[in-house]
Image (cartoon, rainbow, N blue to C red; front, side):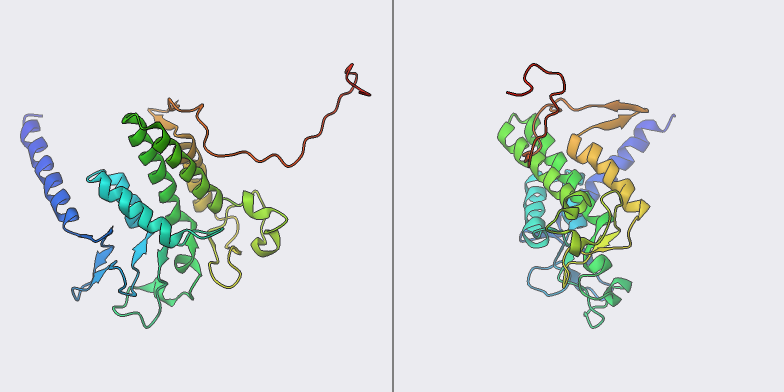
Length: 253
């Protein structure tokens, strides 16, 4: 198009303006989640109102504007949101009497739906960890890349039903290993699945298994595997081994 260069410059300027605006929302160790209609800043440490959430932290990494700050808010989020067997979407929980009022999610009890582990939302952290791993890998910092690959797997496994159907958790989880839940309780019976077999969350689980954990990508309908495919993502714990020797000469030894 004849207006190609002008159009390009227009959007580059818009991009720079957005970067400046976003960086102006940095507060201490995190970015603001929002600014309410009455001017109240949402996402302020010690404010008692939705101080940190998974989406803000993950998208700071996705945007790639300031990776030092992105990494800082990512760890701020993990320190607050990640628990033994669940990951909160945000903290502290929204309430009906939260001031200012922040919408429909305020009507859920603490620990339920968006006030608990909302699987659609916390999945973004898995991909963010993978992006940090790729960044450190490009910089030649292999130990840091390994650290974030392991974080991606650790987070994914907390969202997945697989580790929650073990002998120690199944009575609390209450679901099947082959069905993804929309969300998990994070209070009372922490780890109890809700809204079982939720296809939207399952779709994100599959995508993040490939993109966030494996590091694969889909480009023009071709699967592109990462250069670090052979690198470990975490530890493997073997509980027991069974051998069927059949007609092997080792039989009877």
